[in-house]
Image 1 (cartoon, rainbow, N blue to C red):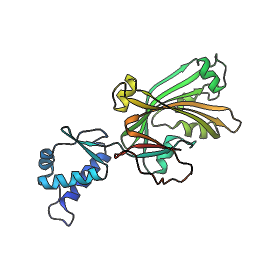
Image 2: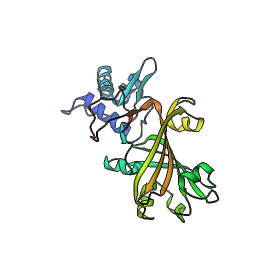
Image 3: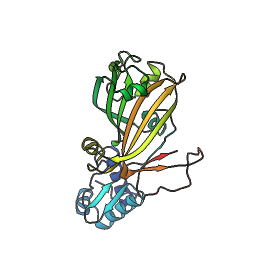
Image 4: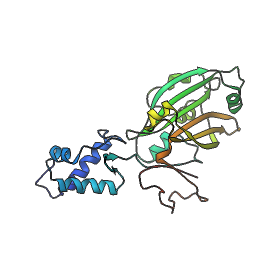
Length: 260
């Protein structure tokens, strides 16, 4: 319930209440907001107050109105530089936000000839396949599949629990220095499992980012494949290294921006 006898306007209190519900996960990215009537009843305010609060949240790209469908929570905005070596958790930590990862599967398997070449190992060696969804502030950003040579990282499975960062484990436990990387980006159609986790339809476009990270001796550290929903991901190219780009977000919504 909002405070009627206070200096803060009711519409601003409603904005704060809805924003807090987004932060604490009551409303997640992609969720439909209650109707205007439901918000009126829940917060004991007028239709005018509800409409002003919703309009301001839409103007801030926190909510979006869809004709004939209702009002929805937009995905959070995130900018990731493709030439960065650090992990996703580290990128989010720098923003003073909380990253999360959910482990979908953990397998020990034999590499294909292709992947043994990528990792510079024998095709008779074992590799560890780690499949996760990752995000921050209750919002899934991408699906990630990481491949590690098990010979180089003995007993690493014991560290792959909870909200773990592969980058931190390799750096702190195995003292790996990650110096450079190579990435290949392609656009393809989402598969069924990917669509389920990325909140899109099977066959929708996704960004597929293939990455190999190397140490100081130019030996492959790991291989990963990151898959992002194409509908809320933009790829922007700049010839400078400035964090703030002059070009505006090409689509009028919160989006994950890959910059280079």
